[in-house]
Length: 451
Image (tube, rainbow, N blue to C red; front, side, top):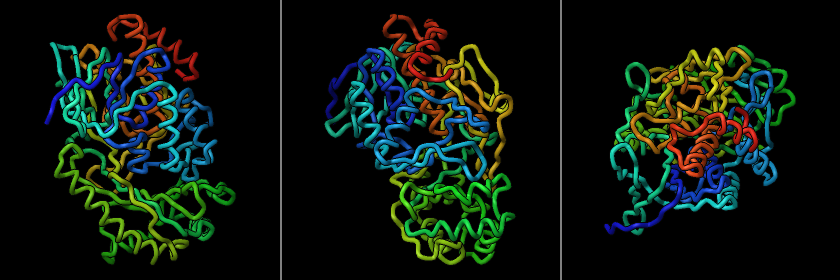
């Protein structure tokens, strides 16, 4: 395959998901040239390709909005396009609000936002190797339809979700729990012709069958609902063998269009998302689980008798893979205590949410303090490499802390921070570790972000 010099920019971002898009937009708006490399032909990452939604969470449990800036712009553009109703109450009770969205509209909104900001997009590009001189990255090798593209830059940002760039640069990383087993993967799918009124009526008559934090009064009036439960029906399905999925409940959310729901119930355990054979098996297993779930829902769950399959995700959803070792590692204690940092560049408010890597349960722990915690800039700075930043799911955090900060709203916030910091490094001609974090915080605040 031919190898050639394809492009050069001040900043090269790998990954066009929640973190990568906001990162590229922030850097481009700061006056830098930016190339964004994405393996698919659209932006959105797991939100678009894996249909992971709704977006959570922009607010603390008390309702204070702690994520704004570019992520807020994206939400407003989704609302304007008809692709989202905006912020709605989380009827499961896990968090304050979330944002239902239609993945097809998200693709369009993100594309417009990136292009309008001056980001140069390289679609269908798969990063595979760094070109380095000591602890500095000089360029990236990317497989394209035209051959191997070499992209040169001053600052590189790994928003791949899996920490691919950092790992290729030999930055140390961890994955999974104490046994190195990551959270399960899930293949999300969309069903149509679901009678939501029948679902709600059953829930209100059988409250013990659902997550204890469920907002039952809110269910009576909300057009968009989240449901976690149907415990007895699920148990019956396991006993009869009609269901063989290692989990303890059904989880789904209303879609944007009436009668549609997003089913987040498949579960694939003991698979390494970085192993191509494991990932291939996970894709197969997830789709096989879809068929059994549809049969089960039609037979046992009120409101689903006439449901039809509308869509399955392009790719299985990955909750956890590499966690890159950075200059600071965010801990579960930091998250649960709502810790604040002088170098905080983004906030999170979602509870610690861990799907048992080896079992069927879910652990959910709420955040203390004022309901939010800071993510310090040092979590985005990987060890060893001088001109690389991390944004999104692969930032420096423990397995437990990642159970909170892995979600889309927080990933977008870290993306805007990484893009802003990278631009400051380029514009001031300073190494990343020598830029003023307080100045970066000031720029983020001036551009609408909350730090």
